[in-house]
Length: 79
Image 1: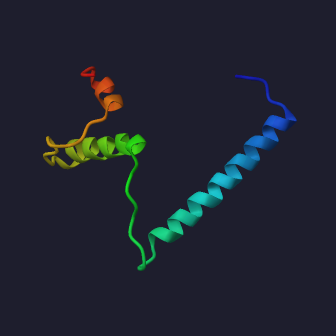
Image 2: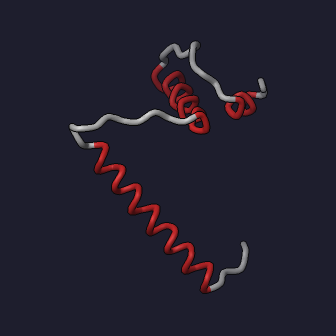
């Protein structure tokens, strides 16, 4: 494990505190009746792949028409 320093520790605390605040605000927004979820950008398509994979494996659903990003194909060795 890499050595720690006070400045690195402070940066990490600040980074995670900011991230925690953002995540909490997103979760609050998920419960609103006013808005709906946004679209995923191309870089997030792998998230869709994971959801489809889990749906198929856990729920037995047919997701053969799913989008599969190149990163996901590399997990299966088909890229």
